[in-house]
Image 1 (tube, rainbow, N blue to C red):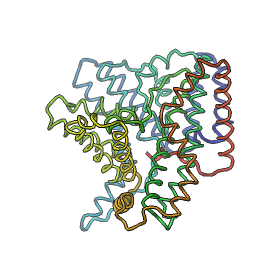
Image 2 (cartoon, rainbow, N blue to C red):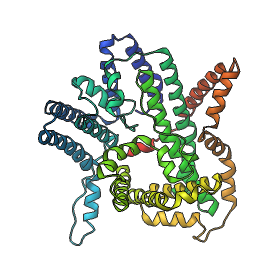
Image 3 (cartoon, rainbow, N blue to C red):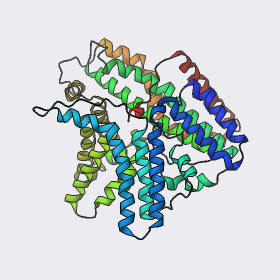
Length: 467
């Protein structure tokens, strides 16, 4: 089950909201827990035991660390047990075949692949679990005394599949005491509908174009069409993932919880450094707080800072997938970030903003090529095509056809990737007495248009479900 489905929108969610509203305060977590387990089991019932196992290990080790707080050897023992279990599960399901396939390239090695299906959301779940136990170890949060509350936290259906990565400290108080307020419900519903529109009306439509370009369905390529294709993917992955995050944040708020923001208009960035402060923020902060800073951050000289950045971004790439293209993707950003930090930023800030934006967007678009193609030859061929090195025309009639066909949705996607409309909406609401009603009508239209699309289309993948 996915958020952008008729089953979720018109059956699952209304039933859960009704049950939650009529449930006594003491049973509201039970409603959320049952809803979350049902939501996950709908698509991955065979792997639900993994989630339950991790929750038991997290809870047990958290209580033990709390009990022995101050006794470093025992605290470290339970910390290593918990992190070891989380990483072992993540490695087994996500990376075992990757390691085996690379070992098989050695002379005389021919190990059989395990072909294990990847549990939904395993990367997000393990990172969330590890953030809890590390925070308890550090003393930045207290351990959860109720397993029932902890299980509710670790299985929350709004973010269980594709984030954002919600740290325990973020919802600690709300797990025990929260109220479902009308203002929060209304704001959450609007945020959910914005995410639904992003996913269904924009990401799904531009995704069809990208599938045609990347899948080799278009025989007459040109430089322009290579750029049109990767721009389509850039919009798809942004509206797909930020749309999911909006829906998750909106759902949480409907039930009285506040999740951290995950996106902040990344495509308006003027450097790669700024881009990664705006894109998938909960992941960037996770790696900063639990890997980069513990490694020493920028406190131990430039050489170790470079080492730390390479490690963090290599791991960031590997987190996204068990393939070398993801490692290359992470290291690609590491090199750019290192260059910006020590050389480029001081020069970038001296040139006009428009050139800073162009610099950033070109580098990001190249990165999406690396991200999307597992085969290195396919990556090189596509990049060569983008820069006119593959003996194709600069512009042809096919490119113009697709450009005209997708012009409107590209313009809409470009405008909505900036805060312009959000600023205008706020100004209109304060100046016009009918503006609030007009904005509410827009939300209704988003729901109706999304519903019509979902009824008539079979194309509805969430890209980050594979991570």
